[in-house]
Amino acid sequence: MRKNEETEGFDGEASNTSMISGAHSPYQPTTEPVNPRNVFRAIRCDLDYIKSHFGILKIIEVVLALISFIFIETIMMCSPCAAVYLFEFVSCSAFIVTGVLLLIFGLNLHTKVPHINWSLTDLINTATSTLFFFLASVVLAALNHQTGAEIAAVICGFLVMGVYGLNTYLAVQRWRLGDSRDGPLQTSEYIRARTASRGEMESRPELQ
Image (cartoon, rainbow, N blue to C red; front, side):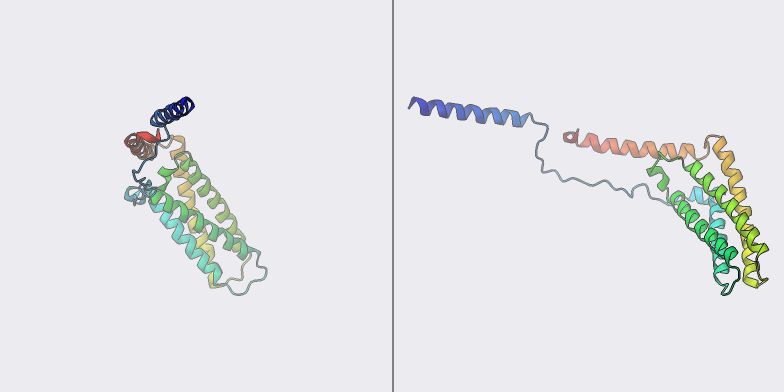
């Protein structure tokens, strides 16, 4: 009987100890539903950027690059074809990269990744596109068969090169000024996103 009483006492103390440790454990089960964060909360149409000089220039660049690519694709026969292939690659690459950057800036997605220097990224893209469009247009102008599609492609190539050159000049000025125009907008959006994230964490203290 004494052994049974000791055993029951030991079991009672163990259960009380487990209940106390469980009450103070930071890993408490909860029935509160977990609301996933809305990752698309920052997506919005930034009309200020689209109406700005950089937004307008990017729209013109995308349209002219697409027209240049269409013109070069209409050429059915070429000999040699190196100039045609080079112009085709440059116009297609510029259309895709500039179009992606236009979507990123136009939909305000760059504020979700503030660790990337987007001004420098835009500067590299515009400077590279200016150089490659110049080379591709010069080569195509020197090596062509005087067809209408080739002449139109060369004209569009020099036009889009000029637009990219102007964009490069403005991007260099913005980069030298420390991104004073777009910096406050990106900073305010980043602070707003961090504040909202902290509010969610404070409303759920069990996660801390």
